[in-house]
Image (cartoon, rainbow over all chains, first blue to last red; front, side, top):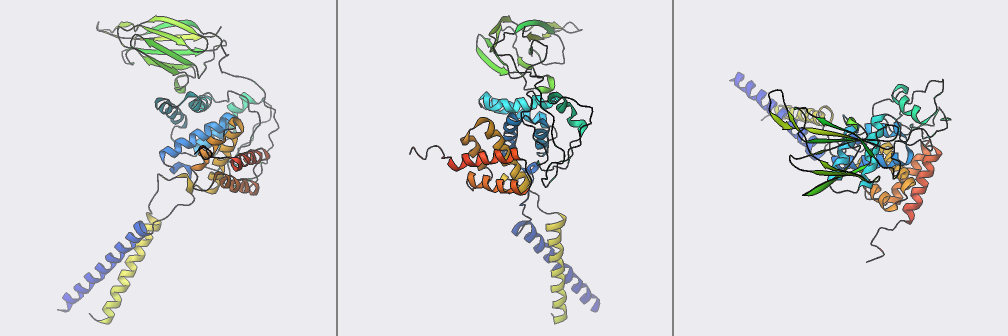
Length: 298
Length: 119
């Protein structure tokens, strides 16, 4: 009898403990959960992250401070910040946003990919006030960018730490920004078709029409509009939205037995009669090949 | 049920509640993943406003700047910029950055949302 009593008491205690545990969890998870008041950008909702990227790109367009833009993008916690920028630019174009609004994103993606600012920094901002995202940008990471806009000196670049609490910069930026490389297109300069290569690769997208646009010094340039027309329609797109394939790269999918005309906007270059070529694989089977068109400003 | 037994049950329940609260608040608290920008930490918030100010330096588009600031909460864009300027002054922002914020503040103080004057 006493054993039964003891077991009953133990069960009651366990039951009381479990009820208490349940009440505690309900209170801490649902009634009064932990509230965040000091959140970081990495946990922003996706549409706010998009907005954040737009603002980063707009700021970069003004300051041309590539290291700082990179640090700010890192705060968003994207695995591939450049890829995210490009993807967002394409999403915005696809949603009908004007190119002027998308261009800063594409420009930032292009500059991050090439490692230096396209336009020299007019006023060198230090990066010390950008909040820390658990990373450090060292001299080796930024050296390429710095070298493009600032004359190299024998003195090694200092390591720049991104402090959580902004502090007065201890290293003064005294280098004078020098205009160096500007890959933007020369206004109005026509593009000449300097290469038209058939691409027969069974593994690649059938009918892939690839473009590479370069300036007179054979450097790829982003932001050039290409218009492709055919008898049933027209499509337009810009170079530089796939920076991983080149700043001057763009592509388009051709259909079989369709004749396309291509116009490069700005230089008014016009190339008619473009057709997807037929290729043959080693087994003798025909498939739709691709074309690589290379344009260059004189 | 005897009084000592009742006390034991209450103690057990209190221990359970304490364990539940510890687990729910400390060990495995609710994690937020899709937050709005209005609860960003002060330094991130200030950096966001600084970016808006830097962009405004270039495009001088008060409408766009106000829209960008609006995601930070229900306060007016001028108030958001004012508090950021105070933060910037207190935290050693560079003169260029403070100038950019002051320019933005001036723009936001005189900014009238489109449509107000044209009912």
